[in-house]
Amino acid sequence: MPSVYRGPKCRQQVREWCLEQFGESGVPHHRRGISTGAGTTSVVTAGPDPAAASPSVVLVPGTNTNGAVYRHVAEALAARWPTVVLDVPGQPGLSADARPRRGRSVWYGRWLTEALEQAVPGKALVVGHSLGGAITLASASPRIVGRVVLSSAGLVRLLVPPAVVAATVPWLVRPTVPRAARVLGHMVAPGGRVPDVLAEWMALAARCCHSSFAPPPLPPRLLAERRAVPCLVATGRHDVFLPPRRVGPAAQRHLGARLHVLEGSGHLLLDEAPDEIVTLVEQALAALRGDAA
Image (cartoon, rainbow, N blue to C red):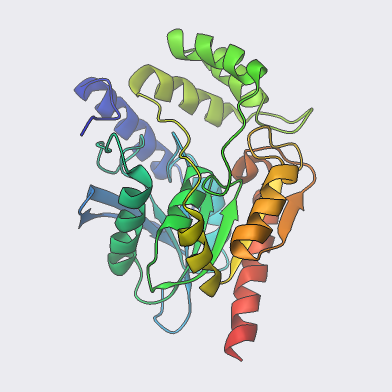
């Protein structure tokens, strides 16, 4: 299987960046590696001690991102609940670097099922963004008692506007922070700010890594099977890849779920609306408690 990295030096640069980010965290956390069929998986736990009797919140980041990029979201979740962040294998970060050329949706679903067995002591509310949302939907883990999928791939094919392509090519050919910021500027709501640390990371990722493409929609039969577990679906009003007009009907058709639209956001919900993400997780957990009662 091909590596996400352009070479060993690149792998080390990404690892050092991620560890530096965790070193700057003001929230106590524990990082460890677990062995899976997809290779070593980095697991970061924070917040209250997980308990088998109540769900842990598990965050699965999307394409070209990881737990270090989204430690601010993990910290916000950990202030309320036991929180686990998984770096996705085959994406730049602290997990294994290889990914298959074909059958990635099935491969990633099996990986998440296996990782949850080791990462949480009991039930899990899994929160997935973009590629992470598709992975969350692909997994049939019995530990998953609820899903929150944010700007999620897997439901419909992503749109790629020409303006995004035009900004992406220079970023990939000669990565710089300003070029990364221009690409990301298409992914936030009009007038939205691209976080400096995200632009810095995406420049490093383009220099050091081979980016993967968006996954195709998951099979309708698989998505129908996911109806057995509550799923909260959200997207940004200004998401250029997954606009509400496309995600809403797909979420209702495949999952029987009503779409939550975050009015002031684009595709980068974890960066643009972390407080709203915490609220959505709170709503999902409250619904689970209501179902249990």
